[in-house]
Length: 260
Image (cartoon, rainbow, N blue to C red; front, side):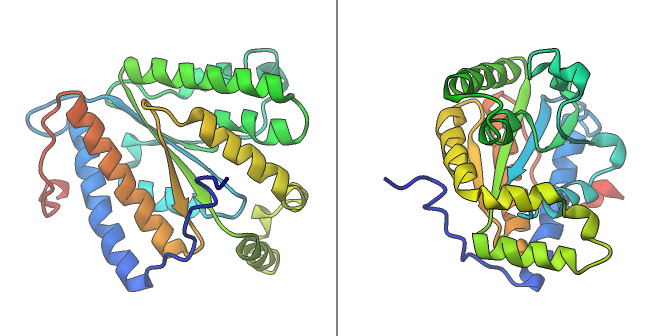
């Protein structure tokens, strides 16, 4: 039986020119929506907090997508949180404990570069938790996300996917570029050797944590130009839909004069 990940068409492409045009338009719309939800447009309305969560195969382009997302926003209006392995202090608590402080309040926006889904991926692949603990953790994540959404947070979740061959090309490119070597670690190569185990866990994660309050949007990232546009335009669609669902009158897209 095929999975959503298997059904993802990785051959979707856009040219650099097409991508730049659509990225620029999307950045303007995102800026407008961000100012609106922060209460900085007329009428002054403070909207729900926005949490944008990025996960993906190593070297799938999360960083580039996040840069396109945030570069059009005033840095005072967005917080980017890189998520690494838990510290000793964090390991003494429930695995969701360390995320509480960075949750966006009303009118705020947070972007996670990786997230609590490491619990269902690296921790599961490395054998830190078994299948029963993974199922319990998935249930807790769904409940946690539902609680956040019901409390006034919009959650948008992205999974960026590339093929095994494309990942190897990107790893080798990073290894040969002095300005990108820092992105490649021994753990990346070790994770690549366990790709089949990761794919199984990814499919399980998507199946068990895709729910009405926070769906997974799977992004074909083989072509970076396509992926960046897909991320921005999908975020706009999700954001506008959730604002409408909550009863907000969302402003129509404009030429960008509100940024002057």
